[in-house]
Length: 94
Length: 205
Image 1: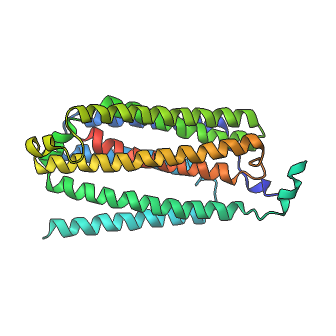
Image 2: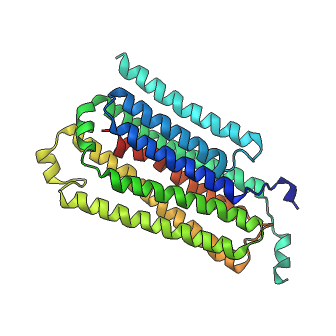
Image 3: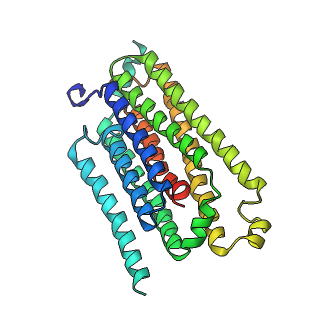
């Protein structure tokens, strides 16, 4: 029926993605173990963002789906970032 | 095939997927709101959050992170297995995912148990007497956010359980795999939330 739309992801892709996710996890544990002050938070969030990009793209199939779902996800992330930025503009300048 | 009757039922894989994604967006914004609260309180109580986070066990948190990442992979693989027509492999992979979810919850149970023993739990007099307001805020957020996340793990396990039953009954099969794919999406969402909870609570000291 809709078989042409179904992209079967090979197991090896998932294993590679898991390896990358575990690697990023250990890297983030190592990096946050070093005292970097404010940079620690930034480093932890950068690794978390990289990991969530991999989960969204490969595990959640965004790479293989029609682009409009990706656009919707991007929009939601932008809405969230806007809320964070506006909140902190408020707190920094009050 | 006694299943032939099902072909008359309405089935729209793409519609199901959009519905699941819309639901996931509401979940993301629910946790997003909590993350905003966390970051504002962290900004206002930096030293207290620093101190309170020392209390959390990074090892347990790391183990649970790895468990969730592996379980995300197994459920993603189960979709591939179903599409390849390997029903047995699909079932085994879903069972592994359920097992890993259960192990995550058991770890969480012991982790919370240790906190309770130390007098750290919501409404504890010990906390009011000995901890600063910022530390109390940290632990309040810790219990609410990891607790809400644990509830999502339980919901995800229930969904995977239903999917597992339907895969073995044959009502979820390669031509009707939307339920399995949506259960997978939900489980990945739970993983995604943990990817942010873990560094924010366990790693940043």
